Length: 234
Image (cartoon, rainbow, N blue to C red; front, side, top):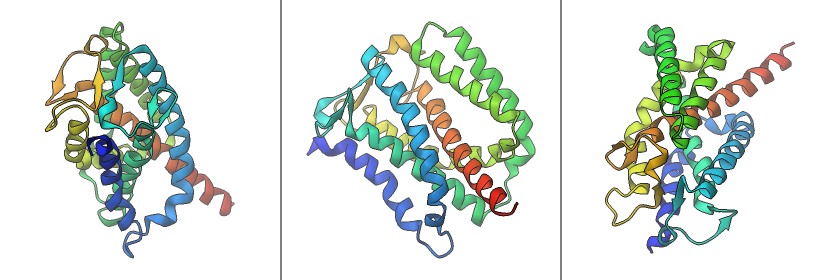
């Protein structure tokens, strides 16, 4: 049964968000027409990155924990990851905004941007010879710089709040993938291509890789939603 572990993690992450998408106080299903196009575009970008790094040996997958269905070098479970995890995170973002619109992080928007951009740029430069570190932090810095000069910057505190809320679940699911509570890793990493520091069993870069994934999904979702309403009211 261990070959279904990665699949079970994917489905476990999305099950409750999908069910609660139909809750009468949330109704996230009505947002699907804005969310899914964004998710597809972002997923394709990350899958190209994923395939590239897998072929380079920056990371890889333990065949004992996947069903054996592959697209290129990627198991089907890894592809589902970019569907299930973003859905759960954007659902959380939407629900928090709808039920608890007041967010104390709004007061620190500029500060959070400045600190995270400087930190990301610094990490990308200092560890420029480590592929995972350099590409992750370089991409995050570019994303945040673009976001900071756009009207969508206003959503950043709510993006951050949603990510902070899901971090415990991130540590659980990603911890399982990287060897917590199980004999071997589902996803292994070449630590010469990252900073070599782990939070429990999770590579340090994974936290920022995940944040980049969520920011891009939310940004695309918000852009499509606002563009639709701007067009319909013009």
